[in-house]
Amino acid sequence: PVLLVALTSVHAQNYDESKVPSYTLPEVLRTVSGKEIKNKNQWEKTRRPEILALFENNIYGQMPRAVDSIRHSVVTEDAQAMSGNATLKEVAIDVFRNKKSVRINLTLFIPNKKSGPVPVFLLINNRPKSNTDPTRQKKSEFWPAEMMIDSGYVVAAFHVSDLAPDDKDNYVNGVLQMYPEQLSADNGMKAIGAWAWGASRVMDYFEKDRAINARKVIVVGHSRGGKASLWAASQDQRFAACVTNCSGNTGAALARRQFGERITKINTTFPHWFSNNYKKFNDKENELPVDQHMLIALIAPRPVYATNASKDLWADPTGTYLALKHAEKVYGLYGKKSGLPATPPGINQSLPKAPMGYHNREGEHDMTNFDWANFIVFAKSF
Ligand code: GTR
Image (cartoon, rainbow, N blue to C red; front, top):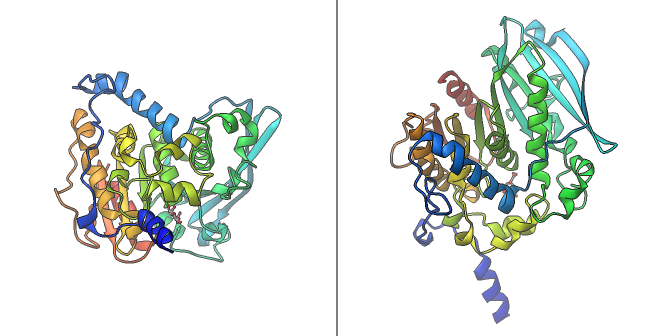
């Protein structure tokens, strides 16, 4: 029993701010070889690709790009959806590679009152499919499609299971069938990478649909989906902005704070999310060549909104705020100033403003009408 107690205390999760260890973050504006980055050209030419490769090789895995062909088929089109307020389109996106394929089932509602290409909120849905019910018999605050339509946005969603089932024994049954080399590589893509890959394939479709403003697609994700929305926006610069809600560890929260969920825990509970290489950093946050502020920096100068819930300490709302603050200097290279104060705003005091927004909603780990109403304000700010 003595040994058991010792082991559990090593892995106990910390929720006490006074027990956050002191830490030094990797410097976002200095290259691995020590060169200072002074302007956006140096950032884009040297440091941004370097950081992207560090995230690929150590955390999320590679992002395979080669495909043999892609087919888009509109399966349903109903111009009288939502009592005539929206056009529902259900689109099958079939991607072929190495004689294998995946089908992404995209649901989208387009507001009828808008003419011309319309900006989009695209949700990477990690919750039950009923949350994005195309018939609207079931309505959920997780994806309040009517609210988004009334505000003049296209609202779209796909489910993560189309790309990689969220299960350690089955995650290979999806995109990874097309890229078997990823499975044997220590920096190979796993489930979260596959979900982000799916968001990019949806973006390919948006670029072909004339009802859509593909220059203004905001990729949204909650929790594990929010880790994927950040990774999608980081590596695919076609996304205009990113919303990451309660994304926590290996999402928008700083790993080195060791507050709430930690790398060992996430790699143990979800061994199918991140690359094999990431396991090397179990209990070794300080050895990572990156921290999560650098993932946000990869999105610069595009807007990022990182949102949280007050009772969701597991996802470290404060560590998320600090990650935004530490990414500010990269936005600064583009002359963009975040309006975020030095310390986090109070509960429900939302700051939904480009280039960096933050709020900490009162309540549980979830995504609600409060969050979405703020996502709209954020989208109107750029
Ligand atoms: C938790 C996990 C978090 C977060 C969450 C979710 O169990 O530890 O990192 O991803 O699930 O996706 O709701």
